[in-house]
Amino acid sequence: MGRFTIILLVPLILVQIVLSYIFFDRHTDTIIRLLSHTIAGDIALVSHMVEDGKSIKQVSALASKHLSLSIHFDKKAILKETGQAKETWLYEHLNHALSEQLNHPYFFRMDKDYIYVDVQLSDGVLKVETLRKRLFSKTTYLVLIWTTASAVLLFLVAILFMRNQIKPIRKLADAAERFGKGHEIIAFKPEGALEVRKAAKAFNQMRLRILRFVEERTQQLAGVSHDLRTPLTRMKLRLALMPASEDQQNLQEDVDQMTQMTQGFLDFARGAMEEPSVEVNLKDFIEEIANDFQHHYPQFLTIKSLFDQKIMIKPQLLNRCLTNVLLNSQKYAKEAQLSMRLKGHFIEIDVDDDGPGIPLEKRNAVFKPFIRLDEARNSETGGVGLGLTIVRDAIHHHGGRVTLDTSPLGGLRVRLRIPL
Image (cartoon, rainbow, N blue to C red; front, top):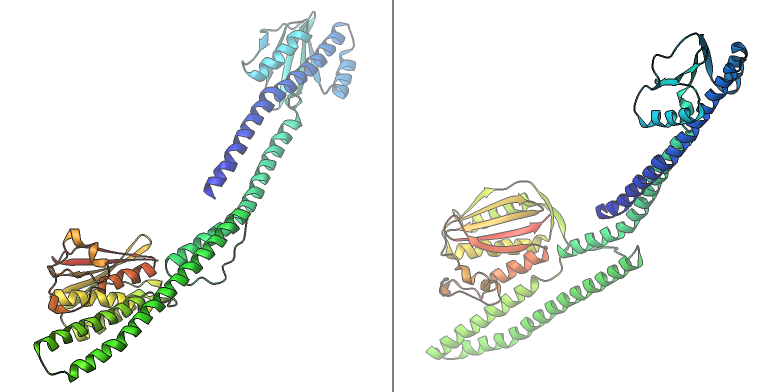
């Protein structure tokens, strides 16, 4: 909208500048020159009548009635100076006209309302007075007013129409932003110009394809998990009936690990399921999760800073995400801190711990499914490597981002960035 306003406004201003130059420098100059000759001609006529011996009283009456001139004659008077009182463009026009029309010396000056012309005749000085507004045309102001008013009217009409054209683009942008944050989009239909409707239809098709893909993936993963549980259950029963041996124990451990991986796989799939977004107070939401965590692991988690902030989230998904981060810290650290801050259009939730941390070169790898850094994490702590994968998946469903950094406590900092 701002760019369009500039695109529309700049030509309008240029047109006004060009029009003003042409009108005032050409048209107005011509008008003033013609009016100056008219005034000079009237003064020359009156001068000739007086010079020819006409009655001053009679000439004065005719000049006042027909020429809008007020005259006075000083007999035996002599002009002290001739020419013009000032050197301006308006004086120059009238001076040029008087020098062409009058055959006698003259001196003239102007004030705010009147023009005073003194003409040296053979037996005295003829003093002529007329209104200064005779040098100006009313069309000058009318043209200026109408051109400015029409330009403003054109600008307002164009802005009004362009706002109606931009409104569908803004709706499309808002819908794309809401979809990117994982919010539900209701009653979005293409409207506006042909190109905008085409883009909106493409967005709707893309959204439906993505939702269909997520739904199919969730169903497939749930089906795989369900299908694997049945043979795993039969294997557990058979192992329970087998005599105890080293091979039986090793096989039992493998089955348990497969069961855990299957459950983790199902949990990962569950993270992609659609959940409606609701508005919550993020401070109360985080405090509830933290209090529940502190109940199971006292003296481990410290809340550093929270503040009231209304935000649209998927509560179950974000609860699972934050719980996974805290459980991950609890497995490998002795102390953790939870803090929250507002940065631009994002809410940042930081979880810091004093654990061994994750090497810089391996921080991207830990988000991949079923990846565990055994050299940095004790394998006896359990898990199948889906914790941070689920965290990242949940944050992406909110249109945010998760990053790993070094904590001020010496361990790992997990930062969750959620758009407002």
